[in-house]
Length: 414
Ligand SMILES: [Cu+2]
Image 1 (cartoon, protein in one colour):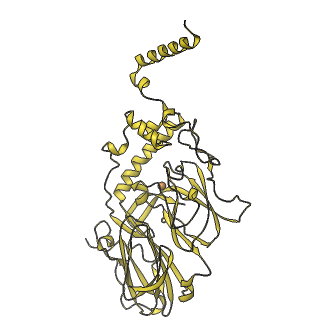
Image 2: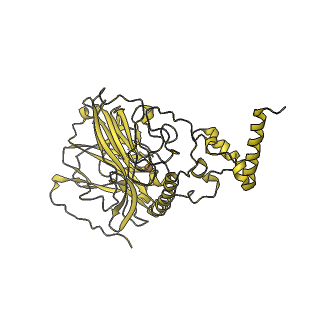
């Protein structure tokens, strides 16, 4: 006896067989839903995972991760940030394209008070995806900005809203965490200074000026080439999204680790197994302080100034993947904070090692009038494309010294 149910099963088998004749791959390879395309995103109040939204477009989209107080619950200090692509001049004769916050290298400097609630509306004006990580800030985990760990990357044309309480006090920073070498080697970083009236450094050293120095390394050739390729690739991805043809297999995004493993079982290969051009070594050729290489670090872009009897505070922020050993001539400074945190005792030093991801605060006292070199003692970083002098050299100038007895030239070796 044939039931209606058996009949339906048989019919389904026939249809499936018919498709297999037309294309074996279509019959054996699972569809996008097998890789988690349609499962709901964990963030209830967000936009959901935008990776495979039908009719994908992030124009007008505004993603607000959960976990922070609403606008009417606390008083927010509000800021706007953008991701842009700009042509940046490191020094005369050297321009290259970079990703930059608000078009600035480094990004704008934030100054807030400890325990302020801050709200940062971030808009992505580029064709590439990004996130922002607030380095050294103890915030709500949904605002931590790590793609594929606690947020989806911020897509082209999307607005993403970070909200958190600024704490603890100290020299913090922010950077893009969509960590392709391109972004790290590009200019997506900036200082995030959290002040407090209870700052013991301010009490012990009555400093009157302060400086923030981002230490940077750029491989301009790699950045030029890689950015061009990446933007081409992103245009293709955006087109595929608009045409609703993007699948996890073409883009390599999976909502769950098991989906990723299943795709590999089904024959998909991740880019890192393909001998892909993305796997390359980075050889920085230019080094910079606040976006400028020596001699462009001098003058209007702000070398460091001091007067006799003055205390100044310098906040050093690692914006690079490399080790920097900053040495000040003619002075013993105090190292007063590491990673933004006030040290239990203030160490005297003239050289400070700033490893990737670190910040240090130092206090300099004006007791030796002159013009003094402040530079990375890794001398490879004091060259511009292999030519000395350049890179991470700046100057400490006593303003009250009168005309200098000797004015150096800015000539470079041939
Ligand atoms: Cu980025």
